[in-house]
Every structure is written in structure tokens, then in C-alpha cells.
Length: 290
Ligand SMILES: [Mg+2]
Image (cartoon, rainbow, N blue to C red):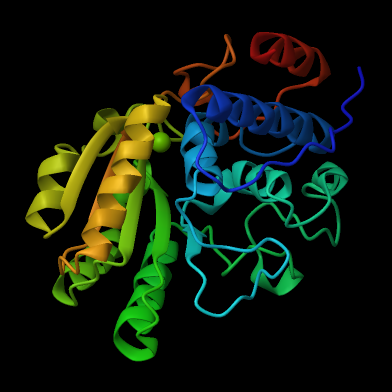
């Protein structure tokens, strides 16, 4: 089996749902290839959030320039659930931040594509190191404070946490701060797949009801089907409207997803949280995604 990557890249104009589906498929195929080559890494979360990334990076939602990744005043994205980085690496490569063939180096010694995002490795598009759960969102809120209150550049900061990550206390400190400081430029995305490394959330540590918690922490909350491109696009539009209108409230997008989405034998199974496909499984997975 050949795990070569295509050289296809996509732009950041608004796309139709059908076009976003093509982009999400490419991202999922890249994730499977990366993990099969690396023989280690996380499958479940990257596949559950691939549709979110398709809308986030390829629908005019985030202001970035892949050819000038340090552009002043750019919007920033922080992957707080750092272990899900294969999906961000695939999105960045498909947006032209770096050559797609570099995806084959995931988790290799000295690669820029570490097993968790590592800012000091210099991969374009990675704004901070992350992966110690609960910390990325805190860094993101700090960035949003800086953009809104100090630099006043009107830039937006997006952060994605897992749902299991909500069990980390620092997540709620960050949420409290985002609300307290009126950060309408902050968008928190929760990949709500009801799976974490050891099982269902309510069997490990119940975090429900998530919507009510976010509302009570002062967020404008949009709950959506995280595999429906129209709903995802509308959720991000609601955030942008909040931001443009200086609402003084941060936004939380609760995207209901399925772990391992798109791959028959991985879907909705927490056993695939931290496991890569072997070669035969990767062949099957790529067939499922074709
Ligand atoms: Mg989860």
C-alpha cells in the first residue's frame, strides 16, 4: 500500500457544504496515512474533529496567510487537546503552510510534526506548544486578552478542547477569565464526542450538562452537529457576528461529534482514542473514506 500524500491544497474562501466535504475527506485521508506511517499516535479525536477543521481553516472564518504565518494582527488557533495534532497538521498542510510530504514525518525524531504541537520546532501555523490538557485554552484566553485589551487589533483567537479535557480545572479558570474580561474575540470549540481515553465521559468523570455550564460561565453558546457543514458554518458565523458587534461575551461552539468519524471500525469507539491503524487497517480505513 502506498501512503503517498497528494499535493492538493485548498484556499480559505467560503466554500459550499459539498466542497467542504471534499476538504474534510482529504484531511481524514491524510490523518490515516500519517498515523499508519508513524505507527503511533491518536486516531479518534482527529477524525471526530476533521469537519470542524475543514470549516475553521477553509471557509473564510479565520484570518490567516499561510505564506506569511507570522502576519501581524492574524487570527490564531490553539489546539488545547494537543494529542489531536494530526488533524491540525493535515489542515495546515492542506492550507499551504508547509509541503504536504512533510506529513510523512509525524512523530519521527527531530521532526517539526511532534506528537504534540511544539512551538520550538518551528512548524508554520503552530502558535504555541500544547498537549498538557487544560493549558492550551488558558494560553488562548491570554492571547485573546492581549489582542483585545492591549494591542486592540480586533484579532480573534480560537481554541479547541476535547470534551474529556473539560475535567481539567484550569479549563474553567480560562472560561471564567474569558467572560470576566469580555473577550468577544475568543471562540472556544468543544469536540463533544463523548469519548475519552478510558471510556464514556459519564463513566469516568461526568462533565454534563456542558451547554448549561458554558452558559453559566458567561458564554454565548452554539450547539451544533459537528459533522454538518452548514451547521458548523452557521456556528462560526454567529461567533463572527458576536465579535463584530462587540457583544462583550465570548462564544462557545459545542460540536457534537463521533470519535473516529468516517472509519467503520473506529466510529464511536473510545478504544481508538490513542491508537494508530496498522497497514491493513489503514487500507480499510482509506476505503471507508474514499
Ligand atoms: Mg473526547
